[in-house]
Image (cartoon, rainbow, N blue to C red; front, side, top):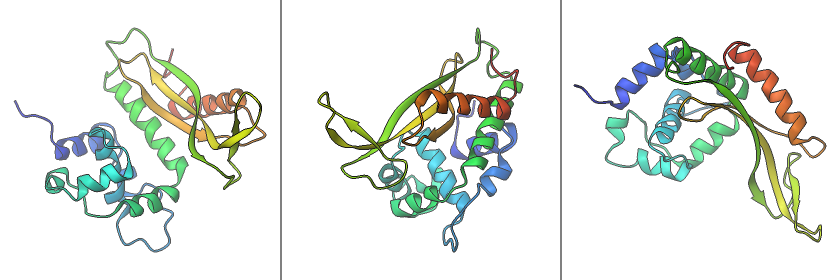
Length: 198
C-alpha cells in the first residue's frame, strides 16, 4: 500500500476537491511578482499540513533538505507576508467553500452524526499603538488601555471529527462580535449552500 506524499496530496486537492484553478490563480494582488503565486500558496498549504503555520516555520521547511520532496520553491518569510497581505480574500473563501462541499459529495462526512457550523470570536495581532482602522483597544479592570488587537470572527465546520475553518474576517471598532458573526454565517451559508450543515 502506498502512503501519502506531497504529490498525491496535490493531486487530491486538485482533482478530488476541484481546487486546481484556485491553486493556479489564487487572486494574487502583487503588482510585479517574482515568485509565482501558486508556489507561495502551496508552501502555505504544506506548512498547514505539516503543522508549521508560522512564516518562519514555512521558511525553515523551504530551506531544508525536505524541500524537493515537498514540491515547494525556495523563498523567505517576507515573501509570504507580502503575498498574504495582497491575496484576495473572496477567492480564498470560495475555494474553502468548494473544498468542504466537494468533501461532503465525496462522502467524507458520512460517518458523522451531524455537520454543524460554529461561530466564534477572538483577537489577533497585538500592538502597543493603534496602527490601522481595524485596531481595537484591550483594557484592564480599571479600563486603562493596555494595547490594541484585531478582533476577528471565525466560522468553522464542526461535528466531522475535526474542525475545518471556513471563513474568517476582522471587524472594526464600531462593530460587535455578534453582528459580525451573523454576517459571516450568512455569507458561509450562501457560499457552501443552505443544506450543507444541519
